Image (cartoon, rainbow, N blue to C red; front, side):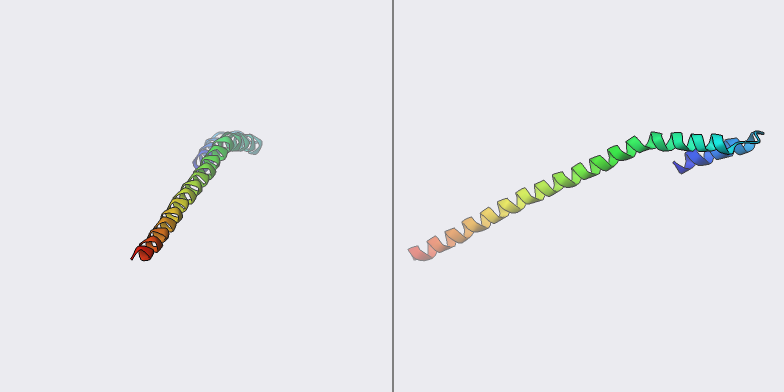
Length: 82
């Protein structure tokens, strides 16, 4: 985005327009409005990835707790048989 702003500023500075500031502001607003949807999309993907990762970790933790509980029950049962 900064490169785009710098390119627009450079092109306006090299022209002989006396009033380049309002045009530069319009171009800047256009660039920001063009980048904003992509930025929101990337942030949304990041949030979705975080939620998916959290869900996966919770699922894995529940499985490990279940296995640990089964191991404990198995140990108790073996001790009673002996």
